[in-house]
Length: 164
Image (cartoon, rainbow, N blue to C red; front, side, top):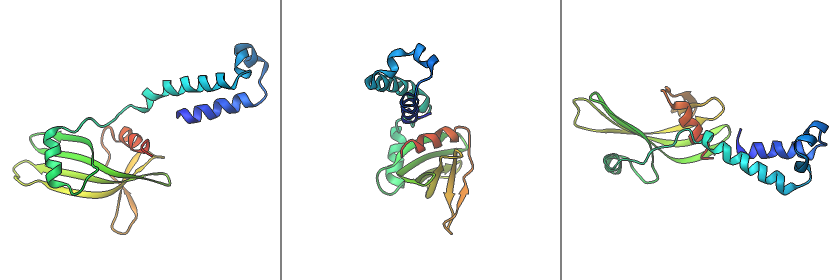
């Protein structure tokens, strides 16, 4: 539960007539609005580690250089990279924009396959569907289709959704 939701629920509970058992457990809680705010703040702080299960690492210099040469424009956020004998690839996003039910982004992809000297790049309109934890790609006709997920996609979608 997000910190704000916890605060609202705490406020609703303390704003309604207290039950006798609650009054015994926390007699001061119903006397002071500042006490309620302090408790809500502490609950918020305890929620932060759960919300920050994943975040992008700092972009390595080699990828920063490639991105500068291959992806147009500024504002790219490094998401992750893969460097195997068969494939080198990096993913980026930029321009997060809140929309109903999600966050739309431009996704940048840099790819070099084994045996190729050239890098390819693509910029795709994508959306983090916050309700179902999936990434979606916009088709040419404007509709959305599920983008193939991998391990870790759900936590990355949560992180993108937290940008709103």
